[in-house]
Amino acid sequence: MTTDPTGCAVTRLRLHRFRNYGEATVRFGPSLNVIAGPNAQGKTNLLEAVATLALTRSPRAATAADLVQWGSERCQIEASVQRGPIEHELGSRFERHDGSERVVRSTTVDGKPRQARSVLGLCPVVLFWPDDLQLVKAGPEGRRRLLDTLLSQLDPRAANHLLRYRRVLEQRNALLHQIRAEGRGRDGLAAFTAELVHHGARVTVARARLVESLSPAAAEALRDLSGGRERLELRFASSAGAGVEGDDAAERTILAALQRRAAEEEARGVTVVGPHRDDIEVLLDGRPARHTASQGQQRSIVLACKLAEMRHVAAVSGVTPVVLLDDVLSELDQQRRAELMTALASGAHQVLVTTTEPLPDTGVFSAVHHFSVRGGSVSETAE
Ligand SMILES: Nc1ncnc2c1ncn2[C@@H]1O[C@H](COP(=O)(O)OP(=O)(O)O)[C@@H](O)[C@H]1O
Ligand SMILES: [Mg+2]
Image (cartoon, rainbow, N blue to C red; front, top):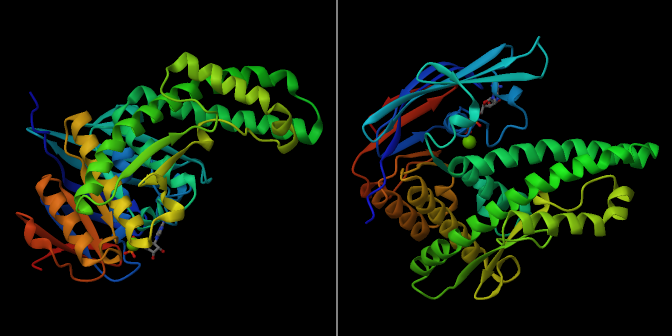
């Protein structure tokens, strides 16, 4: 028996000294929310605040210090999140450390301090930003980010391995750099390698399984978008040749690949194999889409992947994700835009969409709330 996923919505957002917002409170509707305004007023910042709270880190800032309003010591994001009958209050605070660029983050749920990772998944989000339109054509970073954003919200164990992988990768790279520059430090490498392989194997297997389950959902979405003409397949491509076979086997594969390329690592002073080099192969009718798909087909593939993400989150977590669309609708042609809007409305998602122009196709939503953003202040408007 399948039950409908529980609805999830951000009902209230409060910002304090976040980016260009001094103090702002917004009450969002449960369905479509259109956030309009000219350029550089704070529309993206508003979505970034929701994403930062839900993901515990900004999907776009290079460092957390960027989030704090210039000239301020700390910023705060708070939101009321309605999950079915239950309401939670989420809070995130970023504070500069002794006036330096280092920023300390603290997180609360219902007013109580909590570790950041226990917040992940409380308010699942799917992001769709203009950069995502290059997902097929651009380098692998965006494709890895798609996987990791999902994993961090759906799979706490994998999220933890990912975090620890990133940390040990940095340490191992620093040591490799030192070995190359100064010819010393080799003794310390084995311990970092063991830890890298341990966490790396688990990240690899989790990502490989995720791609396996996303692929049919994305294929189905593209079949619908293309009237049954186009066949999409997503394949996980591990830099070490590891896959879904299990943690122990993946450990052996990654370790063997590192050993094979040890000389290259020393020469370059960086780790050359591991999850930070993984990718997703996107195949259209069996051929690499980045080389063969037209611009329009690539956009349809991206749309199909985003729809697959939304359905996957709802299926795995049992909660309808909040969908954040930053300025992408103006980049889509009329047909793709209408298809996206219809899918969002029928999936009963809360949608926050930013735009510089009036939006057509909003009629498919049961309720539309309009907001206007000017110079870091936001207000609800009639239209
Ligand atoms: N830490 C910060 N403190 C104050 N203002 C900031 C900060 N970071 C970005 N801004 C300002 O926010 C404004 C743009 O916000 P953004 O949400 O990207 O605009 P848009 O409405 O075009 O999406 C810019 O004018 C930028 O200078
Ligand atoms: Mg913007």
